[in-house]
Image (cartoon, rainbow, N blue to C red; front, top):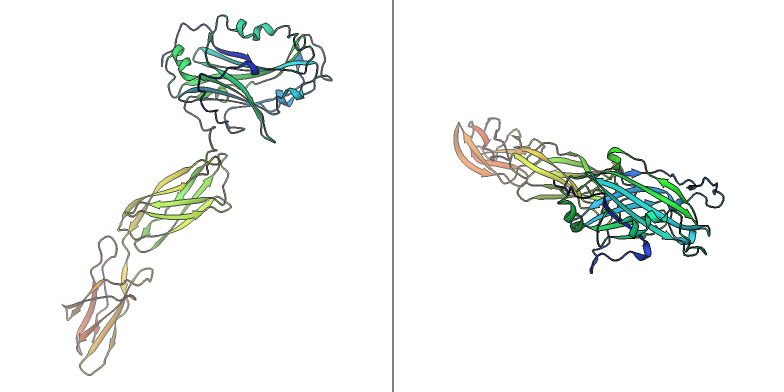
Length: 422
């Protein structure tokens, strides 16, 4: 991974919301907002204290605690075309909620890529402030032209507010063209760490500034790894505990799996599909219960062997991401057995010997060939009927009669009946 050593400080976007230009002639689509609150990133739990001003003046009665200045999360995302920076706020930063004493609110995000520091900032002026032309004393450090001195500026960057709705937070969203950044730095490879992510919100009176909120998370909580974008798009789901018990041919196995949300909690009432790659393949539908568990009965009709099994949740557009889990199921040949042969005597010289071929689950084995032996010599081959019953009608009094099933490779095991005297 190469980096431009000639960079002095980093990249900056510091501009008033109403002055921010569009990114290029054809702006890319608006970024998807991250999940609020996304685990693993900065979560600042309510430092929305009354602003602290430079001159130490107690203004808490004039400018009270501000939910619009309360930073909750900061998320980064590197897409194929953009670097996106998101700061979420508990309240809605609309000018209507400013007091007449306030001239502006400002929001800033900083982070590092290797040793390069990036700074993004956005100001919301109080248009209702009668003294709005009197800028704060230290406004020079936020003046776009002054701030660019000694910095590398990323062209076509944008910044905007996205108001919240109801219980949802508001957002400050910054974007920069990825190509413009990589032109200065070189390629940003997957796995690159963006570190020391921090944010600050400032409240300005006519002649002084106050820090209303800052973030102080360190280590992994203040990092973003390029390519790790699980916070975006529909919330993640996961499938665990896939069970596919071994089964004999013609028997039933109870398949099961558990569907969880991004926090590891069960998702109830969700459709899932079990797919057994047994040559067809076999697909079975199921619905998760209150514990997130879905079950389906698989009737094994494949030859003995080991087959892949996949449990899949297809997801819900814009609501939940798809997920799957894979395993295997082992199918073995079924054991078979004849019932004790019975002998009927329709005449003094005619004997009918009858038996039934069943699997070890007591299910009839229909339509298979059974060989008949009389006095140890094969004399006939007859198919079982739909009930598994088969009869030999050519026996004579005193003969030893036996039924034998040779089995079906990979499906049914061989078996022999008892020998009876006709």
